[in-house]
Amino acid sequence: MFDERMIRKEHVERAINNYLSGNFKHSPARSAFLMFNGQKLPAKFILRLAFLEATGEMVSSESFTGGKASVRVLKNLGFDAIYEKPQGNCGKRNPIKNARREAFKKVIARHWGNVETEKKFSTISVPDFNSLQTTDTTLWRILEEIQSCRGICVKGQINRKLAFDFYVPKVDLVIEFDERQHFTPPRAASLLAYPDDVELGFDRQRWISLSEQIKAGDNSPIYRDEQRAFYDSIRDITAPKFGLRPVIRIFEEDVIWEKETVDLSQAALKVLKQIEKVVNQ
Image (cartoon, rainbow, N blue to C red):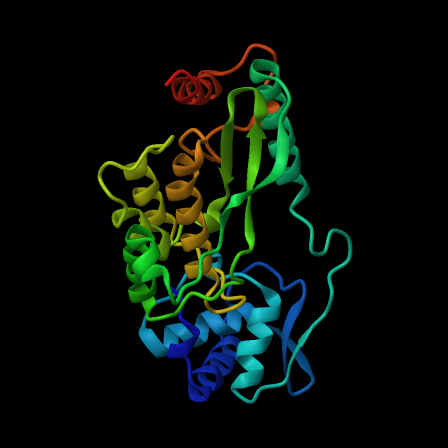
């Protein structure tokens, strides 16, 4: 897993030399660039090469995200790096992802009525980290496991209400539509720390396996993976305590929802059966 703390200035210098003397295939940079002798080099790819120099491991491009984060890391090491705001949908979710979410929402609405998005509840929020050891030992143990994964502390705004992707009022159901960035080593660590009797609306072991396989990463800021893993844990653990049904999680790549028709595919029907099982509990 990518860890910017492993990279030193000399690793980046060797990465630059290797890049300029080699013939590497990579996706073109869109916004983050390392300026070197009048050339604009792909900042994120240079960091991948630098991490290879530091550790011997060539991480995948999805192991860390964020052009601004790449620029920050390079600047902190003394390099001239720039971030150029991309044209179009900057700062917005990929339109394909939006279409997939909207299509999924329509399918859910056909079966269970009105669906709200980004629903927040006053009872589900970021706890006070300093008192967590005495107020909620379950979340405390999960937090400890997350932070020990890379030795990075979770940061967050206390009492910030956490939103759920979808809420179905008719059946008091919350659904999280997990994209690849949710499947990280810290997330695997958090799930492994869940109590055996926790109520969940998804296959915990599969989510652990996906987290261990995908190993996504987001280093903007450096603690983002840990924070996301803990926030997901808060949702999972807290929702049933306050009268909601167990949290359902759907992996966004399991079904191409935007291509589904009225006659749903077997993959889509399998997801609906998963939801129906929780609704009927």
